[in-house]
Structures are given as C-alpha cells and as structure tokens.
Amino acid sequence: MDFRKGIQKRKRLDKLFTLVGLLATLVGVITLMALMIDLAWDGTARLNWNFFTAFPSRFPDKAGILSAWVGTTVIMIVTALAAVPMGVAAGIYLEEYAPKNTLTTLIEINIANLAGVPSIVYGLMALGLFVYKMNLGTSVITAGLTLALLILPIVIMATREAIRTIPSSIREAAFAVGATKWQLIRHHILPYSAGGILTGVIIGLSRAIGESAPLITIGALTFIAFLPTSPLTGTFPYISFEWLKSPYTALPIQAFNWVSRPQKAFHLNAAAAGLTLMGMTLAMNGVAIWIRYRFRKRIKW
Image (tube, rainbow, N blue to C red):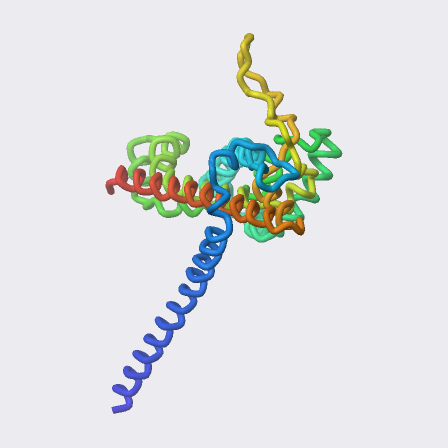
C-alpha cells in the first residue's frame, strides 16, 4: 500500500515538474514574442528601401541605416575570420592533443569562465591592447578582433563538445588501419563534427552581432555618412585592405543613438533598426539549422 502511494507521489511530482518546465519555457517565448510584436508595431512603417539605403540624418524621416548594416556586416566578417580558425584549432588541441594535467585543467576552467565575462570587460581590454598598444585605432579591424575575443570561448567549447559526440569506435577503427592522429582528425573528426562546430560558431556570431558595449568602449562612431573603402580595386593586386582601417558604426549603436533622442520619430527608427537586427540574427540561426541538418544527413554510422 505504501509502495503504491510512493508511486503516485512520484507521478504527481513528475507532472508538477512538467508544468513548471512548460511555464518556464513559455516565459521566454512569450517575452520574445512580445518584444518582436512591439518592435514590429513601431518599426514596420519605417522599413522601406530608403531606410536601408540612406545614411543617418538629423531628420528622422530621412535617416537610414546604410552605414550601420554595412558596418555590422564587415565587422562580423572580421570576427568570423579571426575567431573561427583560432577557436576550432584550440578546441581540437585541447580535446585531441593536450595532455590531461593540472595546466590543461586550469586552461579549461579559464576558458569556461571567460565565456561568462561581461562584454564591457572585453571592450576595456581591447581599448588598451588594440587601440593604445597596437595603434590599430577605432577601426573595423579593432571592432572585429574585439568581438572575436568575445566569442572565442564559445567557439572553443562548441568545438570540444562537437568532437566529444563522435563515437570512440571511429577513432579505434582509424588507428586500427594505421591512420595518424592528424589523418583521423582531417578525414573523420572534423567532417563528422562540422555541424556542431558551425552551429556553435553561428550562435557565437549571433551574440556578437547584438553587442554594443565593447564597440562603444573602443570608440565606435554614432554618425557616419560614408562607407568603408571597397576591398576591390581596379589595379593590381585588385584587393585592398584599407577597409579594415575605416571608422565604423553598427546597428546596435545606431539604435542606441536614436533611442537616446527625445523625438518620437527617432524611436520609430530605432524600432525599425531593432527589427533589422533581429532579422539578421534569425537569418544566421536559420543558416545554422540548415547547416546542421545537411551535415547530419551525411553522417552514417
């Protein structure tokens, strides 16, 4: 009799936990939906061709986000080019090559802690390192490297977690036929874990694209009426890196600037910029889901 009461009690606790979990999920979903609806209510009317192709202006009906979304795009390119190779290489080393000792454990703990450090701290560090010590100035490359440092721990941890999902039988089979460690990584570990790694990279970039505190700290401008220099030239070698030295702004900074103004019309512009930023973030997450689906289809074990 007591045994049956115990089972019923555990079933009630199970249902209670299910209800609590559902409520916790709904809080996040409803909050996000309310935010999206509020942004769409205020900003949809401003989403037109001129808004995306015009520079910022002191007249709210003529102001656009051309320099902001172009700046965000080029900063994300620099961030990805800097963070992905370093993060993936570090993750592979820590998971496949690094000896299991105190030093490795200390490094792993620090990487995990760095993922939770406030973004303003990265901005202050970048201000001292990139702007003052390396004299890179308030440029696109400074902003990209700053955000690369911000998401580097995320990329490293995502790489390690993706590698850990590969069955040990894959490694044993590769070593059994005489493969070296690098051959195992190149032909098996990286292809099989690419979906998880790319998903982690996109999640990291999705966080970086919405950051404004570190960019403001290193001197991002709020009003730019020009675009970075084109990376393509008409003379040999036809490629220029001058755009890396250009001043910049970004969508979060532009939206923050408009919100801080008293005029209601600028607040509508900020809502439209927020909607654009959300659209870019959702598009990146959509790409991550598609990539993960494509890579999972190729895995057959």
